Length: 124
Image (cartoon, rainbow, N blue to C red; front, top):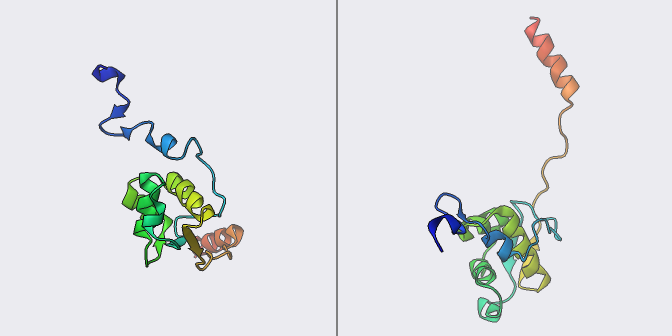
């Protein structure tokens, strides 16, 4: 295979890997995971030997500690969506558990009110 036919781009990395890691699933988020969702291992990494390398690594990373989805993605050097799919699979298989975190604030300020305040300040 010559250089122009390569499936690898020095800047972008492997082009097929995320698709292959998730077996083609790109938007599976069965557990409403977001980047700050915390997970921990419920089984040992030695029990995960039949899983793919990345899944075993996730279970190993989460042994005895809580890690966020974003931290796991960074450790594995994968896209956030890939980490969510892999973590969802591990939750379904009983290797990980989700720990609740405080939900983000839902009281978003009224944009019309903010605009009126800004207009008032500008008129001073």
